[in-house]
Image (tube, rainbow, N blue to C red; front, side, top):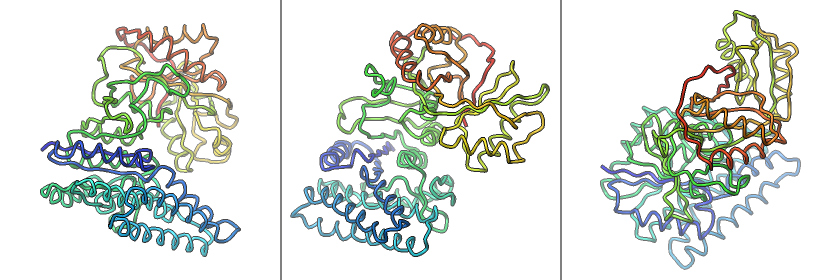
Length: 486
């Protein structure tokens, strides 16, 4: 049976116009598919307000969180009233919303009394935005003549207890999804499901991390063996570069899972890497489309690139990073050392962005966000688990104020012509490349430059390499320096 999962993000439900446009899209697809699922995020700005409530619950000024709760109530009513005013569903909807607001108030009171909040508390609070929005969207669709039912993902997606970044337990999730949803499909009812959240096997609410609503859609699509998952947002699709940095950025019609994963991991504001992994595991096509320009075809993500040729598809960057470099004694296994270092750092909550190693110089270099670099340096100085045989980190070389620039395209890391074109382009632009490598696949080329050169490097690569579209044939070449995404 033809199955479609559609996810609507915060900007697609953040005001009256956005909600009506999203409803128009659902109505247009209603009846075109044998089975259809709608996943919704919290309204734009609501999750931030909820987290502010939690923070203010611990503030010295008692009760300030109540002011934020009033702001939240007013924000919600400003959207609900124009849509449902004079309708019987308005009163019913506001009762449901009020129940969730009271729940928020109770949790904040508890946090204030305890003088601390736990990750579990934060998940309970953060989940309220989706729980409210699923009521609003389902009521709006019902008023449009769509048979639908609001469902909380806590009844469907079973996760571990890693609060704020939970992972699904896929077999248990599959069983729940295929027990709960098919009876609704049989009655031509569209489930309208909360994104972002799940629950442990004992029913405790968890969240999948920021960007988790996309992940929810992919998880459900995987469980249902969906034909496609459509991600509705406020841009036309995935672009060749950030339009804010590069005005000439273009829409990419088709891109591979591998390429978009590298883009997401190395800084592009596209789908969460977990979403892409879930989709690729199930060979589930993803389509990124614009709620405010639905006629645009968007970007399709699948197994193959748009042209199946060789060239650079897109460029992105992460700024304000710090590089820590150490020397490795001859005869030591660099890969094993890298795994040990990453494990030790992750255990301390210090997640590296990437690990470079240079087989000629016998060195290893770890990239961190600058805001945790001091903690990382301290860890290397004090943690015995990081004092590995054959590696000298007692006085690591520290390089701050750097940026990681990532290019993606089919097998570009093993295509010497691409490296030559990129190098000569940046040399002409006066940009010095420091470290060079690839991410998790040959479909990316990663290098570091000084922070102040980052934007210029992106613009030059985009305008001189991507837009000129140098398609070349791959020839495997030895990589002297390598970078591993984590």
